[in-house]
Length: 426
Image (cartoon, rainbow, N blue to C red; front, side, top):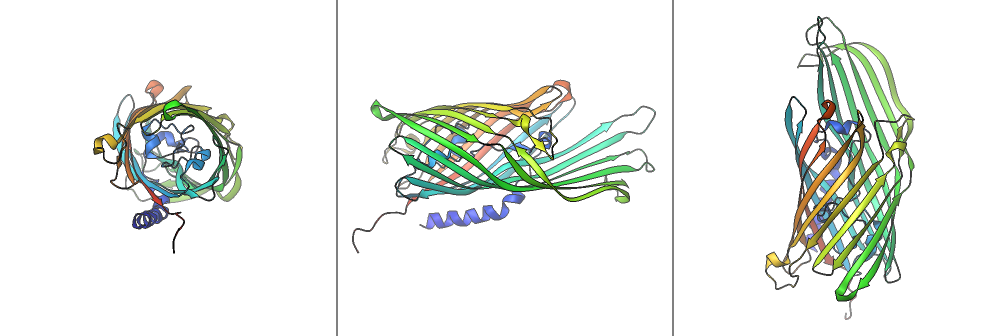
């Protein structure tokens, strides 16, 4: 009980800090679309297996990627998950490179039974993140250099309520109701550093949105000899007109760069709280897992998203349809309670390849990642500590684009307590 209370306190801290914790990334590619998207699932366990999730149904894992998986929770248990995540990124182009890093509180989620056939889950997760600081210098012969500084931060979060239902012994269905909300801020300043007499321009944009989205999922189990189970899963999210408000301000000015005091000369345009829509695309995913209960699991996923249909106030972006494949698995040498720790630990590995929704100068900005992870079980408890790491790269050096080499990590805490025993004696 004390563990659960401590976890709830940690969750309240996450809720209070979540919005501010997302502003620390540094990726110029987050300037496009909604920014850098989180997957539907950020569980440390599944992250360590390449992100496979659609065919995973486990009583000790909160799997938001397929809400049908909630129906696999134990009928007497309360499950809580939270954690932190972060990365170290080396950004490079053909002439220079730099490094950046960030750490953030990642998520908070709980899952528990309602009836014999109904399970539920609630929590808060990130949806997208934006963070970049870019300076572009153009050398004009026989004239002053021109510098354009671009900055952005913010992102979207999601509060969710998920439900999974058992329909017979092997079939599960479910849905997530998500309230997605957040804000992004972008600015651009153009100035002439070689002359104090040429007036520059500055633009400020602020977009704020909130609305409801829905995910649907289904899973089916096939049972074989020796306690082996093949689980097939699929998910779908429908296209949605997401409500947003935007404001912008264009000014002429001197200064505002290199610690020079900004002096506004004139306002060119101003718009406050213009209401419109952002068209969220439809998406679907399929996957499977094959499990030897208590010993090993292997699986694979495929996901597709229709980002060509994306519109923001009726305008599209440099986006394309995205798809992702992932494969992964885990192995437990021996799972009895008296086994040595190294035999009770889970060892995980995965791979993913992702064609992202960004396409610049006819180059798709793709992601390749290889992940590893371990689970550390606690003695005489179902509580576990999970650690996952991933090495990979995103982007290309062709046509003066940017390549990112990254090291991602995730540290998660999973607490399972038996709460729903009925008293036999009083």
